[in-house]
Image (tube, rainbow, N blue to C red; front, side):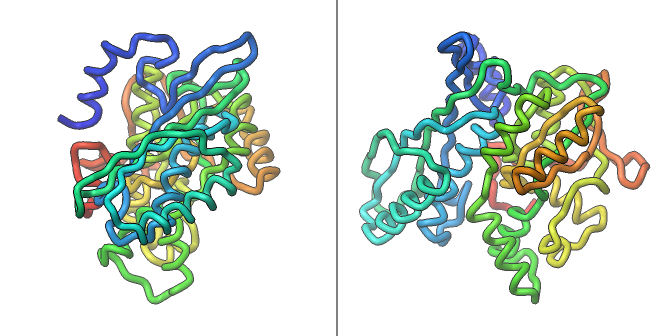
Length: 328
């Protein structure tokens, strides 16, 4: 079964209010009148979430970053992490991983509090897990379920860079521009979720999530969780110069960007009047936000290109149960 089917079955077990019906990126546990604990867990599996020849230090970075991205989407301040690490007896790899872990913990200013280690058979695919714990104000912990008809849809940063970086590493695309190539591969291997921006945006938005599996599939998840319809205007999806050099900016390139995943940018909805405040907030944090669509009554996801409706692609993004590192 695919991920969504398995999660549907798990919902019958995850009945505590903190689980948010398993419709969100994190659990939110009320511990005081004005404070909540935000809890999230993400895993990386070799050959699924990273390439076997990715540098170990970047694997450690990504393990921390993807969890920080979930905290950012809840406007949470990191308190600590717990790591599950499968040892395979490759000392050189594991020491390099620890160097990368040390760097990531320092950059995101989060302490390692504990976890667990196990031994794996030699040459078995590595499996790594991290639980991140954060704190947030009770009044400003956005949920996927809070999008409202009339909201505008926004994203932070640029979309598709990590997907293009993966495609370059796999040889599915090429570019003669070495600066663009390096930037895109770095986006894939070392995502940079913006915790400060997430914390600043949280009081201003309705729904918010991070873009991990792809802009389109994550937008459809917000639509489903909020029982509303979301429309995305593909010409408004922000692309980096590096992406445009490698992939172009026509409709097919924008569809690839919107379905690729691993962006770890923020996807959120807010009332129209908040647009300038959102742009200014991002600017103060050294980032950008762009309006890419709107929320309406109804259900599902729809797309347009320069004002004309277009059909949804067969594949909106990554779902577990398929190979992440296959060509779309």
